[in-house]
Image (cartoon, rainbow, N blue to C red; front, top):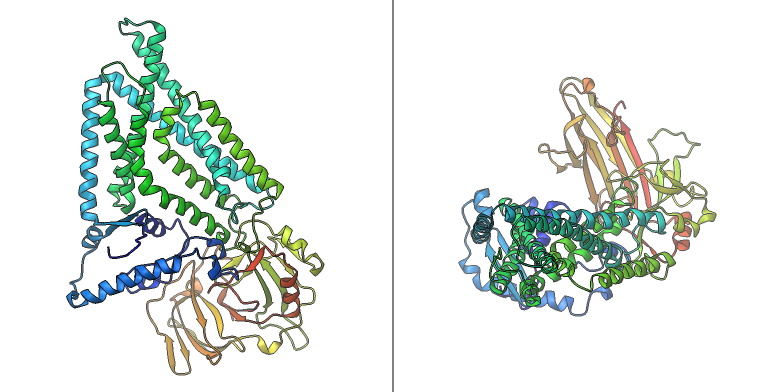
Length: 637
């Protein structure tokens, strides 16, 4: 409320909490683990460069830091002035918390609207009840013909959704087949308008026009049963106008259903449905006089459309555009386990989101087009936009990646060992090239073809925190740049078997102070992790994801490298059996360890030098460094 230039939308929070956007900020741990409340600030533009070398200050829009600083300063000053009034509150129930949840959104970065969920529920319930009463009264007065007309007009909305989604999703499936990259819009997000927005709009208009013709046919049939004093030509024209009005009103029914669902589940962003329902309904009632016209229909006034959608567009257009940009940006890091997701999946997500926005926001506009002389021109112009955009992509004039907005890749010199090799033998060593961006690496490998890379899904690499199921690897000239002294060790110090079996293991990560350790929770009920006599992870409250508990450690130059791990086995561990599946292919392993070393070997350095400029190393807490050692301990050690 005190921010100088407020910018915040609860719809973004709703999408994060729903899991649709697979991302988070550093505030997440404070909220989920400690249950603390606070303000979360994030930049959403140029999401494709996050955690790469291209994540530079120069990519921030001018004034972004100043904007954040002024808002933060105003907030801190207000908080400091009010701190003496703050006091500890009694523990609130989940119901109290849900009722006190803040609903917030800004209007063009100038005003911030904030109110509680309790008020939102009251407002939304009021709008829903009034809308239902109006519609019920209208249908009772209009009788069966009105009910049938409403049903058919709403069917036109459903057909609109089906056509719009189908056209847009079809393009999403085709792009990986005809383009060098399945995501050709990463460096130029505006391509989404032509690639997905244009076909979605054509589909929406086509689908609704099909529904319009069905509705028009019914109205003509219904009018033929009544005594008519008008000529057939005049009557046909009036039926077209009546069908146009029913389609406009069906748009409000669409938003009414969305509002009812959002209100039932207490979705904070349901305020958008209120605005898109109330404003057009008010404009229609104010300018067109009645919901179910008893007089001869007249053409819908253009001012009805302008008055009805101006406020909704002002309030929601900015956030919807930013959300499309955000979703487009995160597609570059969409495949967290490279090779596990289909190439078309990211496109389909973007296509569905764009088509949904088109159907939701243009539903009132479309009803005006069916009687318009500009219908053909609109079809041709939208089709031309799609064709032009697609030609720019296929010709390479607009590349999928650039030097500034590059494809995220990882080049890792991997040394795999289970500790079972002799003095004159070497563990398996190779260079792994993979990318969290959907799509194959054929064009990238062309630049390093003399390094002997093979690409495919034949070799699955388990990096403990994630898996690589599609990538490229080369074992030529990979024995230099590391030594056996760098290989970590997992040594069983003691193993006391029985009902209460416990095992002590010493771990030496050698030159690495950044590592990830996975513990099989199907076999291990609990464990204790120590460094000398310091207990780093105490016994109790252990959970696993897909059968593994993962510990990640990152220390400085003088961080410890020797640890003690005490494992407490589950009872009847020997009798436990599990069906093998994609996530339990390594069920025969008790421990998995990856140690990272920030070192370039001669082979990895050559590969990085030869990679094209549109590639950028991706680095996150779960990602390996350029040199990684993979070790494991089998269950039957």
